Length: 137
Figure 1 (cartoon, rainbow, N blue to C red):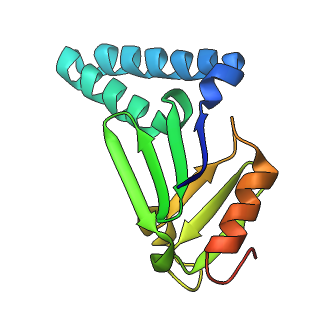
Figure 2 (tube, rainbow, N blue to C red):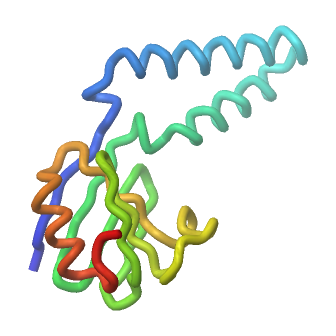
Protein backbone atom coordinates (compact mmCIF):
# COMPACT_ATOMS: atom_id res chain seq x y z
CA UNK A 1 0.00 0.00 0.00
CA UNK A 2 1.27 3.49 -0.87
CA UNK A 3 1.61 5.64 2.25
CA UNK A 4 2.75 8.82 0.48
CA UNK A 5 4.03 9.87 -2.89
CA UNK A 6 5.19 13.22 -4.25
CA UNK A 7 7.56 14.87 -6.71
CA UNK A 8 10.31 17.22 -5.56
CA UNK A 9 11.46 19.66 -8.22
CA UNK A 10 13.42 22.53 -6.65
CA UNK A 11 14.25 24.14 -10.02
CA UNK A 12 10.58 24.74 -10.72
CA UNK A 13 10.17 26.66 -7.48
CA UNK A 14 13.46 28.62 -7.66
CA UNK A 15 13.85 30.24 -11.10
CA UNK A 16 16.64 32.57 -9.95
CA UNK A 17 18.76 29.60 -9.00
CA UNK A 18 18.09 28.05 -12.43
CA UNK A 19 19.54 31.19 -14.01
CA UNK A 20 22.58 30.95 -11.72
CA UNK A 21 23.15 27.28 -12.60
CA UNK A 22 22.82 28.06 -16.32
CA UNK A 23 25.28 30.95 -16.03
CA UNK A 24 27.85 28.84 -14.17
CA UNK A 25 27.57 25.99 -16.69
CA UNK A 26 27.81 28.34 -19.69
CA UNK A 27 30.72 30.35 -18.28
CA UNK A 28 32.60 27.23 -17.22
CA UNK A 29 32.04 25.57 -20.59
CA UNK A 30 33.15 28.75 -22.35
CA UNK A 31 36.28 28.88 -20.20
CA UNK A 32 37.13 25.28 -21.11
CA UNK A 33 36.68 26.04 -24.82
CA UNK A 34 38.84 29.18 -24.56
CA UNK A 35 41.55 27.54 -22.48
CA UNK A 36 41.77 24.06 -24.03
CA UNK A 37 40.22 24.83 -27.42
CA UNK A 38 38.32 21.56 -27.30
CA UNK A 39 34.59 21.11 -27.72
CA UNK A 40 34.92 17.55 -26.43
CA UNK A 41 36.36 18.69 -23.09
CA UNK A 42 33.78 21.49 -22.95
CA UNK A 43 30.97 18.95 -23.39
CA UNK A 44 32.49 16.76 -20.68
CA UNK A 45 32.72 19.76 -18.34
CA UNK A 46 29.09 20.70 -19.02
CA UNK A 47 27.97 17.11 -18.43
CA UNK A 48 29.85 16.88 -15.14
CA UNK A 49 28.45 20.19 -13.92
CA UNK A 50 24.88 19.32 -14.90
CA UNK A 51 25.24 15.86 -13.36
CA UNK A 52 26.44 17.32 -10.08
CA UNK A 53 23.32 19.48 -9.73
CA UNK A 54 20.86 16.87 -11.06
CA UNK A 55 18.90 16.72 -7.76
CA UNK A 56 18.14 20.42 -8.31
CA UNK A 57 17.11 20.50 -11.96
CA UNK A 58 15.65 17.01 -12.47
CA UNK A 59 12.34 16.11 -10.81
CA UNK A 60 12.70 13.46 -8.12
CA UNK A 61 9.76 11.17 -7.43
CA UNK A 62 9.40 9.64 -3.99
CA UNK A 63 7.12 6.84 -2.92
CA UNK A 64 6.71 5.54 0.62
CA UNK A 65 5.01 2.15 0.81
CA UNK A 66 4.47 -0.55 3.41
CA UNK A 67 7.61 -2.25 2.08
CA UNK A 68 9.98 0.72 1.98
CA UNK A 69 11.02 3.92 0.28
CA UNK A 70 11.69 4.48 -3.42
CA UNK A 71 13.40 7.41 -5.15
CA UNK A 72 13.35 7.94 -8.94
CA UNK A 73 15.32 10.63 -10.75
CA UNK A 74 16.00 10.63 -14.48
CA UNK A 75 16.83 7.07 -15.45
CA UNK A 76 17.92 6.12 -11.94
CA UNK A 77 16.00 4.35 -9.22
CA UNK A 78 17.05 3.77 -5.62
CA UNK A 79 15.03 1.88 -3.06
CA UNK A 80 15.44 0.68 0.51
CA UNK A 81 13.27 -1.61 2.61
CA UNK A 82 12.24 -0.25 5.97
CA UNK A 83 13.97 -3.20 7.66
CA UNK A 84 17.33 -2.05 6.19
CA UNK A 85 17.09 1.48 7.58
CA UNK A 86 18.50 2.18 11.04
CA UNK A 87 18.75 5.95 11.30
CA UNK A 88 16.74 9.03 10.43
CA UNK A 89 18.08 12.58 10.46
CA UNK A 90 15.47 15.27 9.77
CA UNK A 91 16.34 18.76 8.58
CA UNK A 92 14.29 21.75 7.46
CA UNK A 93 14.10 20.86 3.76
CA UNK A 94 15.08 17.19 3.69
CA UNK A 95 15.65 14.03 5.69
CA UNK A 96 18.35 11.41 5.47
CA UNK A 97 17.41 7.75 5.93
CA UNK A 98 20.43 5.52 6.36
CA UNK A 99 21.19 1.85 6.87
CA UNK A 100 24.08 2.91 9.12
CA UNK A 101 23.38 3.20 12.85
CA UNK A 102 25.82 6.08 13.37
CA UNK A 103 26.65 9.09 11.18
CA UNK A 104 29.29 8.26 8.58
CA UNK A 105 30.75 9.67 5.39
CA UNK A 106 29.08 6.68 3.69
CA UNK A 107 25.60 8.05 4.48
CA UNK A 108 25.54 10.04 1.25
CA UNK A 109 26.14 6.86 -0.77
CA UNK A 110 24.30 4.21 1.23
CA UNK A 111 21.37 6.26 2.47
CA UNK A 112 18.66 8.25 0.73
CA UNK A 113 18.17 11.99 0.96
CA UNK A 114 14.43 12.64 0.97
CA UNK A 115 13.53 16.14 -0.23
CA UNK A 116 10.32 17.54 1.26
CA UNK A 117 9.85 19.99 -1.64
CA UNK A 118 6.48 19.23 -3.23
CA UNK A 119 5.24 17.01 -0.40
CA UNK A 120 3.55 17.38 2.97
CA UNK A 121 6.60 17.69 5.24
CA UNK A 122 4.79 16.86 8.49
CA UNK A 123 3.11 13.74 7.06
CA UNK A 124 6.37 12.54 5.48
CA UNK A 125 8.34 13.03 8.71
CA UNK A 126 5.65 11.21 10.70
CA UNK A 127 5.77 8.20 8.34
CA UNK A 128 9.57 8.13 8.40
CA UNK A 129 9.66 8.31 12.21
CA UNK A 130 7.18 5.44 12.47
CA UNK A 131 9.06 3.21 10.01
CA UNK A 132 12.78 3.90 10.48
CA UNK A 133 14.54 2.34 13.46
CA UNK A 134 15.94 4.85 15.92
CA UNK A 135 13.51 7.69 15.17
CA UNK A 136 14.41 11.29 14.36
CA UNK A 137 17.63 12.70 15.78
